[in-house]
Amino acid sequence: MTAVEVTQDRAVRWGVLATGGIAERFTTDVLGVPGAEVVAVASRSDASARNFADRFGIERAYGDWAGLVADEEVDVIYVATPHSAHRAAAGLALAAGKPVLCEKPFTLNTREAEELVSLARKRNVFLMEAMWTYCNPLLLRMVDMIKDGVIGEIHTIHADFGIVGPTDPEHRLRNPDLGGGALLDLGVYPVAFAQRLLGEPDRVLADALLSPEGVDLNTGVLLGWESGAQALLSCSVTARSAQDASVIGTKGRFEVPGLYDPQRIVLHREGQEPEVFTLESELRGMQHEAAEVMRCLRAGETESPLVPLDGTLAVMRTLDAARERIGVRFPVDA
Image (cartoon, rainbow, N blue to C red):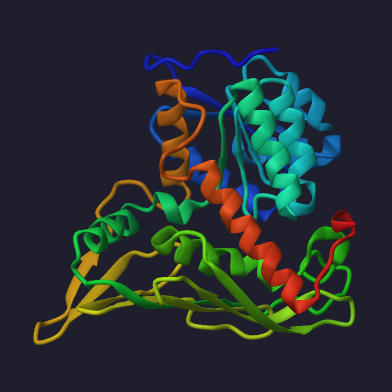
């Protein structure tokens, strides 16, 4: 099976693989993107798929992944399973020639990520990590301003993402079989933020509080670059943090409230009043990443320049290194 050509004169038809909370949020958002339709959904059970389809007015519901992947009227599949199933779900779709937008963290480790990227490139099929932060126009504007030297050379990056998470050891955030822990679920945001600005680090240090099940509950990561720049990052499932970021340069700094989906950023420079930049877009939340996928498909691109696969692999290598430092291993690492 090969992917159907997506032209400018018709809607892009999405299939949603999984029916959890993140799938609900994405579906709600993508239905508001001009030129997008959600035509099918899949789950591991007929009842779950049918219930999801009924709530969102989706025509076709499949009680297995294979049915969705084989649906010839689906142009692209959004993988919203727990990340322990990303490799299997995205791999099934790519093997069938279906373009894929895969939730973060991309996979559980670098080996799995490399397998997906290799498969996509071998089959010449579109693949992108759903790193919506990278598609946010406000952060893209900040990146351009930093490249123009507005804050000088980056000296330090601070970023955190903490929540009060579940205490049930069977919950996916506590279960090592499901890739649980703060680092992969939340820490991916601060790590990706820092690497978007400075690239892959030369040094990775980390420390963490581990649960009895062996996943990280509260983690600090220090990234270092040969330039002397550092990133001080933290994530937690035991306490809610400000979930903010700051980028400190030799001539000023950017403050980024709401790291993962900022609506404004603030530029501070010595001797000048703070400048506030707000998000000016008709799109919101996950709509930016969906629109980027649709743009790529219509342009015949197999990778997004905003969320390049090599960048995704670089973030996975950093997450692997941090996990090694804190002693968290998953069954798939063996």
